[in-house]
Image (cartoon, rainbow, N blue to C red; front, top):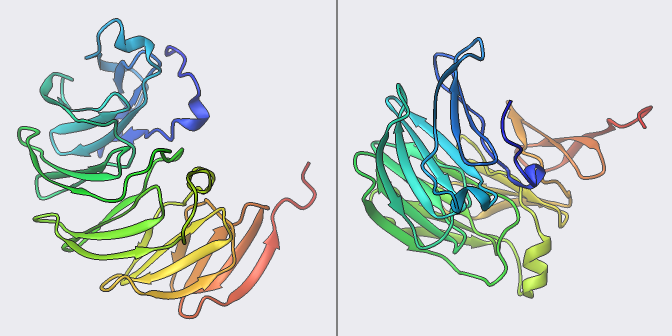
Length: 270
C-alpha cells in the first residue's frame, strides 16, 4: 500500500524492474520503494523536504549495474545505490525533467521541459554537455521520447522537431521538423508517440494524422502515412503494427508505408 499518486494517468511514470526481478517505484510523497520478487520491501528512500512532498511528485527511473538514476518534476537528478537506496550524488537542473532516461558508456541522457537534452556523468552527476533546441511557452503534456543508436542520441521536442546529436559532445548531426508554423495552442494539442528504432529506420506518429518513417543517418523522411496514433509502434520483419486513436489495429509495409490491413479491435466491445 502506497500513498496515492495524484493525477496518475498524466504522470507517464516508469516502473523499473531490475535484472534480478526486483521492482522499483514511488508513491505520492516521492518515497522510492524497492521490492523483491515476492513484493517484500527491501528498502525505501525519500530525499524530499516536507514542502516538496506536497508538490505532486513525478519520478522517472533508469538502471545501470549498481545505480538507480532518478529524475523528477522538481528538476532534481540523483543516483541511488541499488543495494541499500543510499544517495550517491544529487544535482539540480534549471528546469524539470520530461523524458525517458537513457544510459550509455557511463553517461546519462535526459530532456527537460525547456527542450534541452542534458548529458551527465553517471559517476558524480556532473553535466558534461547540453543541447538547447527550440523552447516554447507551452510544454508537452506527454513525456518526450529519446533513443540512442551507436553514436547518436535522437529525441523529439515539444514543437515536433526530431534532433540527432553526437553522443560524445552534443553537436547537432541533423534536425527534421515534422510540423509547419503553428501557434502555441497547436503545439499543446499535438501528442507524439514514442520513437521506435529498427535497424536504420526511425518511426514516430502523433494524434494529428501523421506517421513518419525517417532514415537514421540523415533524418530524411522516407514516407509519411495519414494515421493518428499516440501508441508505440512495433516492427516485426518488414511489417509495422500500430493502433490508431479510433481503435483500429493497422499493419503497414515498412518499406513504402502502404497499409496492408486494418482491423477494428473494438468490435463486439462496449
